[in-house]
Length: 272
Image (tube, rainbow, N blue to C red; front, side, top):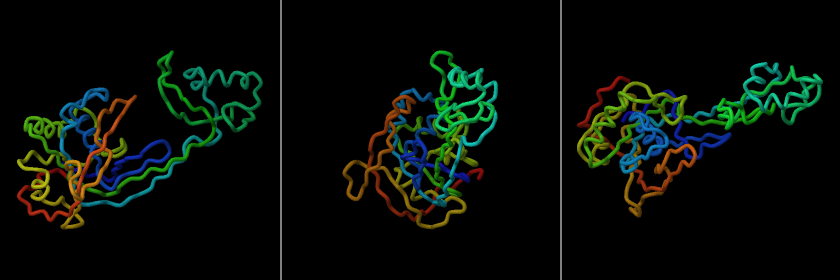
């Protein structure tokens, strides 16, 4: 698989107001990308996808970039539609609407409801109405930091004894049932993804696959999944167990890091 894009983000601890990125694709993210290509629902059992052996090679590691966000500050009019579509906001505004003055909506005082504004935050379906409503209606701005890899390109490889499964994955990556992205929804992949199905182990295929166009090194680092306890292997916790939105879970796995000097017998036939 060719994973290239102007921006990628492979978070391992990406929660709340800080979204990190690993220096290479995580197994969880790549399996999630494949599941999306095959049309899996998030609640669906991963089945044989969880058994895929995984490796990645950093042909162009890219540059880490930091994106700082401030969301939801300011003083702008409260729109009538905000009161119509969100019953909780309407209830909080009731007193201020009658008095046209006084504190309302969160920690900061507002002299009049007409000057109050808060960008919708923590949006989710209302359990009674089903309509999307904001769970956080404060005026306080939310600050967040998000990290990306800019101008990176990786080769990811998957190993499994079932050739038919690999063929289905390869086809789905070029004819996806759902939208695909490289770690975050703001990072769509560029050009072709699938590099085809080839006989051999992860080690032999990565060692005989040509470097991607624009590679910055002739000896890229590779991270290759291996058996627990393998000498020199390290543990990482990105083995997907379930992508269910209410109880997403990951397990540990083992991998080795090594430099490869590819001697290509497998060439790329891609749209960059």
